[in-house]
Image 1 (spheres, helix red, strand yellow):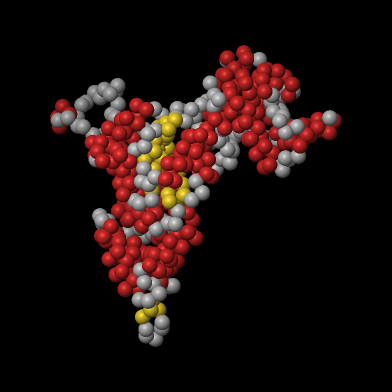
Image 2 (tube, one colour):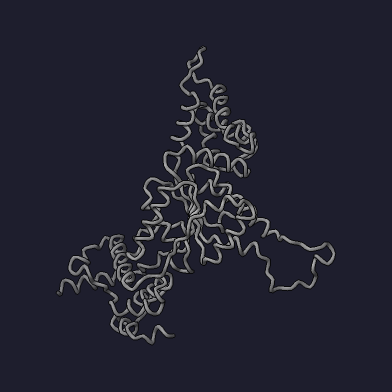
Length: 412
């Protein structure tokens, strides 16, 4: 028992350094979260997996309120969807240069090695191994480009100039050793000036929308894995499309110029929605969208119907992300503490009592659950607050625990 008390003291020493086990949780898809999903959500994950693995070119709505853990759901899905490239997209981050930013996120997910493998396989299919003879025994690049264009132009690419340039970039990447590095930089989405573009015989880099879309379509459709775009907070588009009716301008432009039906934000949001729907033409790509309510989903469907009623058939019935059940908070806490102990190389702490909630206890966790109604984000906020008190407060641990065991502290 004395040895275990010493282990508790050592854990408190680690905490006093300023290491908060719950501070790492963020509301973005940029920092990976390794904690598994709560047990009550296993059925939800299995339903999502089944749909994604068995369907193609669908839009799957996930509905969950603020703080229910939609971002954490993404990280769980990425771990579970082993045969998919799963990419997190925040509309906030890709609002400008939509296709370019989508492509950049996708390439960051698959990495340069996979990109090289895809371009190599494409050139193989386009006749890379047919050599032309002369002083050197080399591939006939012009013939490879011609075969590529004949095959790809039948797939209804809107911008033929962009298609030609992407074929040029891919074949240069694989078949021209003198320009391979620059072509790879271009395919990785690096920004290039006119001199660099001229050197590899290209007109634009991937900031040009039609270029980014064309190469995204080619890469995704020729990847060995299927692809999933997880687009978070999709209803942001709705708010952008609705002008603020509550504010009144002193000067109304429509007095002089007639009714103005679309603001700049509304037009931009409409364009983004059209571009997202256009992604449905990419074979092997499924899209998950998260929204806060069924009403938001119905508004999105109305907007889609106005554009192309046939696209409504790609929408699956929504799945719902609910708050934690009481048992989930205990499981979530223990898993996260275990992950924290692994990071500080102190997993020995659990050998004596694997079921411990130290430095907290079951009563405190129960109080937190009832105070937050099981909302994961609010639960994490309280856990951060309590551990900050343990780390930075001058109170001893017993007094802190006693204070949080008292329900009145949660009513402030």
